[in-house]
Image (tube, rainbow, N blue to C red; front, side, top):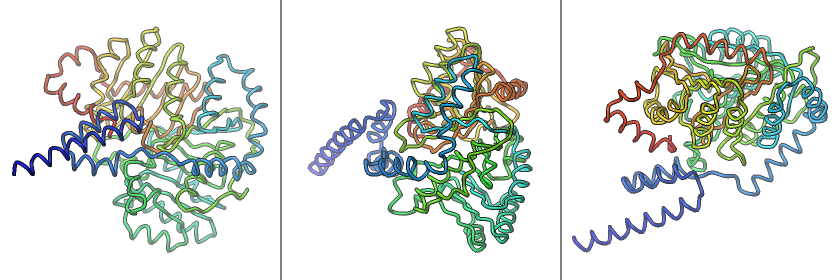
Length: 483
């Protein structure tokens, strides 16, 4: 027995050394490396299994990089040519109207990190409740003439899901092309019958990176968190609202607070390009035909929009860099809403620096819990932020699920990305950046309205936390990079 035990101990230490070398060579965030090492030390077998499915760093190979580059620059260059040709002209026209220079810097950042095209001729509606979004979306779906493209993290077969299914089947029978992408994890319990009925009507519906396949099992921890709809190349939707009754009636919560966008205009071609790439990555089917893009509009509106995307296989963490740049650019005030708050060191430092510089920084997160680990983890960041002058609010009316950021009543971002490590590193996300005062003011007015349903968390509240609660929160933070 002693001999067997000695062999097991030697094997265990060899395993730890090999694992440590592998993790170090991966050059991931130090916090993530440490978290995985702790898991391996405490639970060697379970930790290894978890790493295979959740922890392997997934970067595109050089051949894949080349393929995607050619895909974007080549095949999409033609349908987006009118927008590409107008980039410098649009920038010069808009620059003369902008009172602040940081808008140009933000535009250049997104252009460099996610090939984001600046669009100017747009019109939009902002929804702060799921019912308003779906009232409008159902009408738009009913009026679709050519195609409907939809991409959601969560899609339920509840009452709302049945209404949407009925409309999509009816439209498909009238000759409208309907394509759907859904996330395998978020839609794990989506009825197989529901999917069969859609496919039976001629609708193309696929899971994005089906982790149930042996060839893609390693993608289990990478979620397609996007919520996109493109209708006839003229209307696009993006934001925090998935398809489910809870986004209308609150579900198990008394209320569900969210933010979503409906866009008409040039930006819809960018949403379509994002869907086209995701569709190709999933099905290897191409959607390059000009009929899916309408880059020229005459809405008589001057509303600049730029769309940022990121994912675990992106060369740049463009949405994290966008958030960092927005925080750094603020000169007067900065308002953030995020369901989950687990900032990485750069965002954490930027928030403290902004507050210490005299900028009004307010962060609103949910005070009604749906996932305990990220909720507990957030508390470990509060003390330093509060000491720096950041004000933190817990939304108590229901679940706060909005993902918005607004600076100086000048620029705002609305999208799918929370201010947490998962959104920055592990999820496919899409945010819409709007360079327009009225939209930024609308987001800030809603923020002020939401404050009425919040409880402010103060340094006194933090000091009143028990030692047991602080230990629990610190343990949750330790595994935050794995969440």
